[in-house]
Image 1 (cartoon, one colour):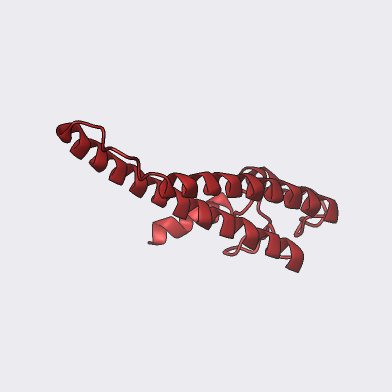
Image 2 (image 1 turned 90 degrees about the vertical axis):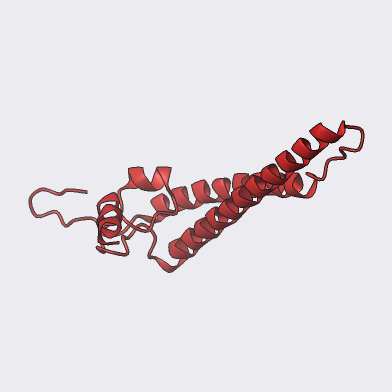
Length: 133
């Protein structure tokens, strides 16, 4: 947030803003956990019976099932990471470090946090860290 005159630059979000972020994060966690449960059920239930299928198609179907199961496992792993990142954001809210860029110490814009509530860096800092890799 840019400031003019002698008004100090905002360095922390208010309690009301933090509560708004917390509500958003809790909603995202609930949805992500439902999605993860569906993916895990898909992985567990992908052992479809192909015994009534012609031998040629049976081989193709089994190969397709393996690929689908692997893809669902990858999606489930990504979903688990997303949930971990969201829970870490809740911890940052509790300890007073939420919304502060880990690289610059500046406040991450509210617009960014509303879209990516688990963000730990400003867009500029994230892009700069990618360039250094």
